[in-house]
Length: 452
Image 1 (cartoon, rainbow, N blue to C red):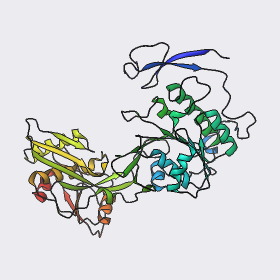
Image 2 (spheres, rainbow, N blue to C red; image 1 turned 30 degrees about the horizontal axis):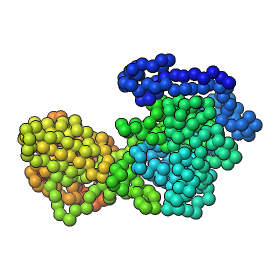
Image 3 (cartoon, rainbow, N blue to C red; image 1 turned 45 degrees about the vertical axis):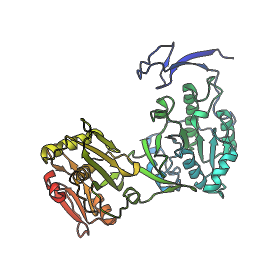
Image 4 (cartoon, rainbow, N blue to C red; image 1 turned 135 degrees about the vertical axis):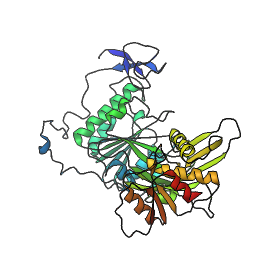
């Protein structure tokens, strides 16, 4: 029996220390270093010695590596495929995080029930009967999905060897534990060890593995930060539990873009893919109201039409309030300063509230013009034309700056029935015979003339 050792880990960032200390040198957090018992016996491989899936590792030149036998696996979920970059890459490790109750387990169970491949769904949090109850609502006739309730990695790998699945899903990584580590499940050392074993399995057998990860109260993946460095893809499942819409985005993706966005609608039968998100992000109104403007933005390769709402009112207290939901508050202050300096609007003594509808957060500078238009509309209490939309950036000197891929934004606005789109005069547009009117402006004063 090997000697039992103890070491000290920071519960915030995962840094390791030989002895206890009050502050972590890496992340500067206080009282996060705890002692954990670790044991380092002679490790066996994740598979048995006589396993037939062992592969000899030999160096190959880049041009000699064959990709023809290992295309991406289609998950049959267009939104999930888009965020991943086209599907699951064989041998990849994907980590999905999100708040409790947001729908992480439902999303991956739904995907596993729809996959045309043999899938093993490993749950350490629910029993097989509990998962069966949820599966009955989603897709009860699937014959390719196998449910395993187990938390010990050695037992999981024995079942994997017997079943030989094409895809493995683990819910969740914080519930797993390995015999090689003496600490409890969810500790820093257990998460690192279990993830290492799963990575070794995924790379050697070219089997894609998807992990569900809990998050902390700060919204970060629970466990050491090194966990996010070890995996290939980190996905974030977001949304308000009081609303039915959920957003899937990639914080890290070694095999695709991190700018793509997937949108789902939570229903009783599971999560429905939203193929045209512009329809749900723009509210339907019977009458025209001031303070509403529509912006043409991009999330990855997908054009979106989002609604910007602004409320400008006289400040009741001495200090005016500046509040933004889904938009950078510092950028809002900058745009207000530009309006006051370049357009002559006195907003210094007024409260300004800004909201991006649909519960999404946008950092595309092309929505600047829509933000300015909504603020002016609310300040003057004049409703904008409901078929107007905007796509331009506003500079500090009040100039209207061009944005990238403006033609794609124009075509999306035309498809949704908008009659006029305001863009920068300096954008080069080669579109011909479009039904939508392209209004080109060069400075913020030009916009004021159309609103006031």
